[in-house]
Length: 438
Image (tube, rainbow, N blue to C red; front, side):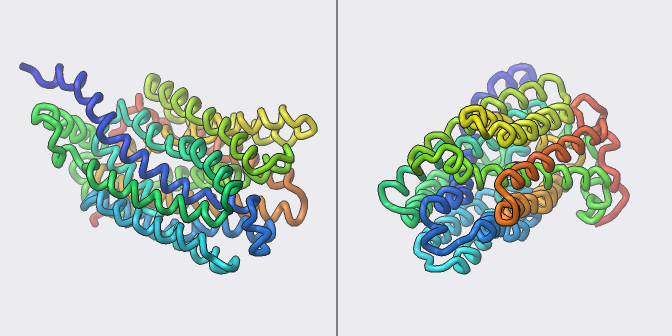
């Protein structure tokens, strides 16, 4: 029997069900711990600790300074060691830090813990994206990435009403304590279910395993050739496209986290609602985000046009951000624009993260993802902090306009990416630093 003809119809069912769910759940917990401060602030934390808009923006953004430290090490560990163990220890750290946040007494303790949470979460995305690249060939990787990155809207759907309810029923301190304890529950699930690579999984047949390993190896050989295995990270950093991806991700993350961390506050002031009602209103943008991610990742996988389906959602995101302010005299039109922002929120992300695998060998892609995510996520600091400063100096409108401009710049950069980023383009010359030794 020719396994190559029968295996592809079997493997997806197993991988989609056995690999994606535990990774997705761990990512959801990480995001809940990351953004629960967005609900805690208008839910009483700012008043109890005397936190101004500028300090709120700093507390929201300082996470991403800490986020820098484990990006590249995390990616390398996932390539050479065990991403499973890395995320397992990360879950322990998330639990401890979140619970400690629930007992703080001043804003400076908050800043320290937010920074440490950023360090603890820093390696997560490059690790899980590398694990996905170990299990899914290029033709499936856009959808696989999109499902994993769907942790953002799913976490939003869960966090919004849960946070609103906990704050209303208890207070903001219990929000951090309860969500921190959830990390321990997820740790048990993670340790029992996840495998780093097909070679380690006990449930996969030899025929399926061999097909998957050979398919992924053939893709790597087509991308880079043998010499690229020895390319150093400094050589990859000399690649122009690498810096285009970093800049694009920076402006994108500025928009994402500026929107995410200020959405509950914006909704509260726009609608004059209670925190419980704000939590319910915040669900719909994240429901839209799921639809947007599936739509654009599917279109990208079908057409192979990565650049186009990164730029289009960014344009839509920028436009809706602008309209949310321009239409603020009509509460429901402004809210509709905020829901539109949610639809486009993560639509470009799954497609964007297919590009490094087109440009770098598997040996280098983990580190490359870490650098792109680390430096790009400085936008996660700049977005919330810039909005906080602009609210203090001018108005909330100025902060939102700033985010719209940032997203428009990201869209332009996506359009300027080279043709080799598209799946239909020949990737043989994608990595420029082939001749550099490690």
